[in-house]
Length: 102
Length: 102
Image (cartoon, rainbow over all chains, first blue to last red; front, side):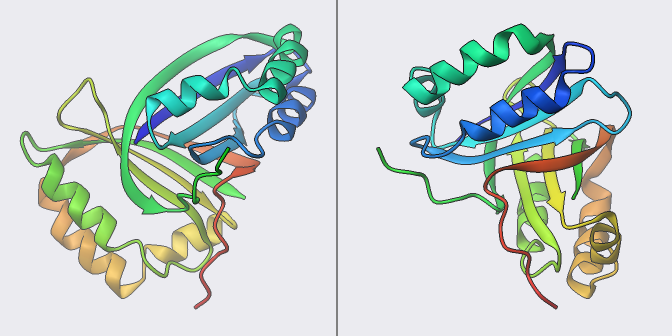
């Protein structure tokens, strides 16, 4: 498995709008086992995204999906930057969905 | 929802053993929506644990479950410490399980 823990920073005041875009584009991503979007309670502009994928190739392929490409285009002006992005190797647990198929 | 992103450090060489204990005790935790255990590919002693719960009370209550108490007892000697533990407020996404009921 391949995982990512990302700390994304929205433009000031744009977190809710950015989260709505992120959540609208997560359906039917082949190989996606988990993609959870969370607010940081201590910083009003920070979004945490924790992801698990069948493998790194599925994650990379998702970035080319038309729905994801469209979301990236709408999200980009609302993103101030990434404070951190940490790759991981998930090994198990609760809440690993069955991967969507193409 | 209530979330946690934890970076746990195992005693040197004890990561696999610690992960096995963590994974064995995650069944049937009421209110648990996601609990994913991952290795850090860049540090052989680091474990990332990303969690989502119905609320903070369910998370706290889980620590008193007999199976979790027993696991904590076995895990403690294998844990060097926590590099970080970040609370979050999950708002949605893929892979949020139906919460187990008591």
